[in-house]
Image 1: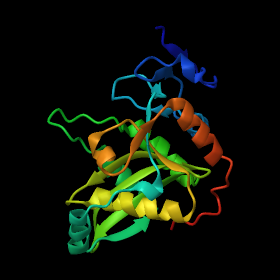
Image 2: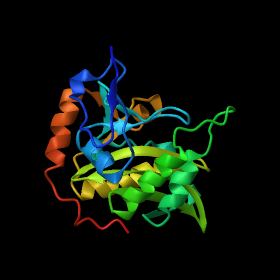
Image 3: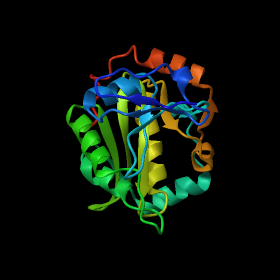
Image 4: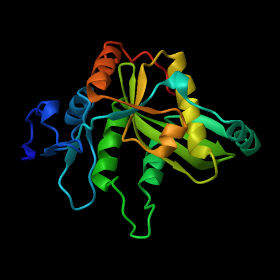
Length: 224
C-alpha cells in the first residue's frame, strides 16, 4: 500500500486509506490546529526520533469507558497504604517529561522534544491535561492526554512507585464519569490496559461513539 504523504496545511486522507496496522499518513506538522483536527477525526501521531511524523488510526481501537475501570482488592489496599494525593494540570510539563524518559536499555522514546513542545502548546490552549500523583511533595506518577468534547484521548502514563499510574487512571475515570465523558481513547491494546477494564472495538464504532462525545462542550469542566 502506498503511504499518503501529508504536506503542511493539507487535510488528512479518509480513514479507510490506513494500512492494516493503522498507519494513515506521513509528514505534516505538530501545530495545535493539526493536532486538534487529527484527534477530532480519530487520528493520532506516533513516531520515534529520526522518523518523519507518522499518523495512525488503528482498527480495532482500544478504549476504556470510565465506569468500567477495574479496581482489584490488592490495588485498593496498595493505594491506601501509599497515601497518594491527586492533582490535575498542576505539573503538565513535569508529567510529559517523566513519560518521555527512556524505558529500555537502548534509551529510546517516542515522546520526542518536538512532541513535548507540541503538547505543552496544547496544554496552554486548555486542550491537553495532566493527572499528577504525589507522595508528600514528590511526583511519583501520572498521565496526560487530550480532551475534546466528552472524549479523553490518553497519550502516556508513568509510575515511579507501585500502583501510582493505576491510581492516576482510576482518579481520571472517576472524574470523567462524574462529568459524563463518553470514553477514554487508549489507542493500542495492551494486556495492562485490558486488565484495568479497557476493551477493543472496531474503528467504525469508535468513530461513531467519539463523534457523539464531540458534540458536547468541554470548556465548562474545571481541571484544576
